[in-house]
Image 1 (cartoon, rainbow, N blue to C red):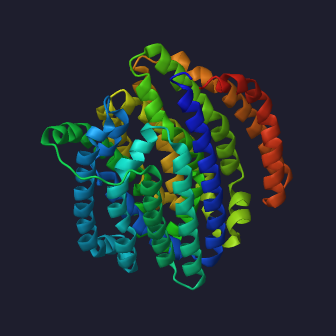
Image 2: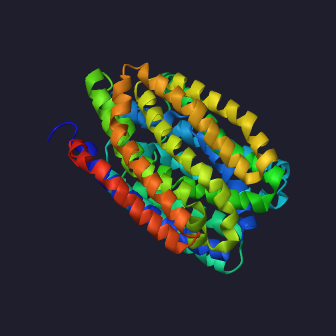
Length: 469
């Protein structure tokens, strides 16, 4: 067995995990959209913004060091766990006392209790993150499959049960926390790696020096993906925020499915070839192609058939989401590309570069998102988000990757056939839109005929992808 064969096996298990998990989440989302209101989703969105802000700082980025550590990761795991646990208690204390102020600032004071419940996830993450990263390092995606399935089952059961009994946004919060708690116990039990506390001051200094730039970049990334909600809530109201959240969630599917599959192994894969320029260029090109093939057609359907997608899945009360989704679908493409580039840069030890890239992205959003919300509501927010990503962020990441020695040709070559197929797909869907009204029929015709136009361009790439071992 070659040194690279675990990558291919891990990708397959990660794909199975993601397909099963996201299919379950997808079905659950459809059910919840009919049990809850846009206002309920808006309240939950406020709490979720708080949670992921805490998670970005939760362990100061040190858990990723387990993936990159050149020696035995068990040597650093106790220190990593201690840092992670201590910081999680600190950030949750900030959450508990800051929740009323945060909810008032977002002009949704009823979100205070939901924020406090949902942010218990920071405490759970503090215990489980080191073990989870150890499993990623060892490419144990089969184990992650069972862990994530346990999370899905518990989260779905609790959330739907509470939503059906009129618990509103609380159902989403309690379901999420229950699933996280149970899946962490499953992770520890199946891996036989329970949290171990310990502290080595010398290692701690080295780990924090490595992790702080990543924590800063993560915080900036959290801000980037949630600053739109920060503006949408106070400027447009909880109802509009709920509509926008559904559009953003739909546009995030390529990230949550395709990018997640690859990211579970990409950092470790890039780290293995970081010293060989030829190998890392080859792996990066194949990862790019692997992501582009499914991402481009899915985002094309989401963007060009936004209205029938939303009304078919969630019903006509959510039709207002479509005006944002048609632009956020373009953002989804950039997010997939930027996350792959992010992992590549981190694996090569260029965490400070990622920090500056994220900072620039955030500054641009702070300028254009409120302007978009003021001029065009949630549609304007979608336009601003997508415009910044395409015009500023994508070229910046391409330049950063090229500066590591990756040739421009290596960046562009994997995309030629997927882009050609996408152009054909766009033409077919536009014809379908011209001939039909927004409906399930339009969605089926556009999706099926578009994919038939796309497939011939990418079919010859199957052998190339098969070479990823």
